Image (tube, rainbow, N blue to C red; front, top):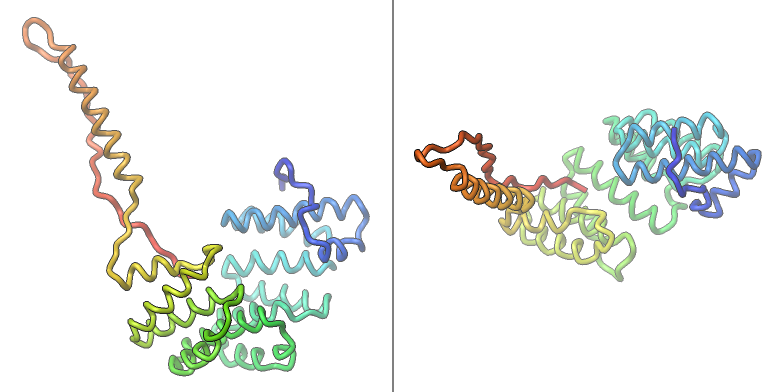
Length: 273
């Protein structure tokens, strides 16, 4: 898989480079470049290319936890929860770290194994997670409760977490709480917390603003189509000028084809966070 110009591998943090020290210098540098490319392609939502780089990384550094984590993240984004879960388990075994536990629980959820997801979420290692991972785990577990039809339990879990000082993960917590309130039918509460999520979401990791607009009955349209129509109108005016120039003395007009491309503007599609 090709490496983009300017990608050196030095973009990785020190912890990953520590893992790569088990490799030869040349191999470590190559693996680092492919790991950066995995992140770039995931950000671009080019999952096939991301998988290609991840497979190269695993082939060259299969015992490195960061390599297996990269593979797991791509599989997770692809919706291949069985493969992702296998990779995340391998990362845990190789590194001794449980930081991927929220994603492992979500994989169990994605596989339709709610009971196993809840059992993993309440395991001893789950209690040892840091604050950020605990917040992510809470969001996932609330989703499991909703899958099981336990909406009140999901709302109560999230309600206990959303109050307090803002944290880097607050936007996602607010969003999850608003989404659960929507399912429960509390439109006013959902509006309040979608607004809170939108205000806190400085990195645009959720579609809280769009969800808030939906609740307020605001329809967002793609203005690009309107601009296309304006361009067509200007082209049509130019054509009319050409027509005047093409009229001969007998009053005949040269035949010119008109491409009628008038369209109604289409509403932008939202996505769930």
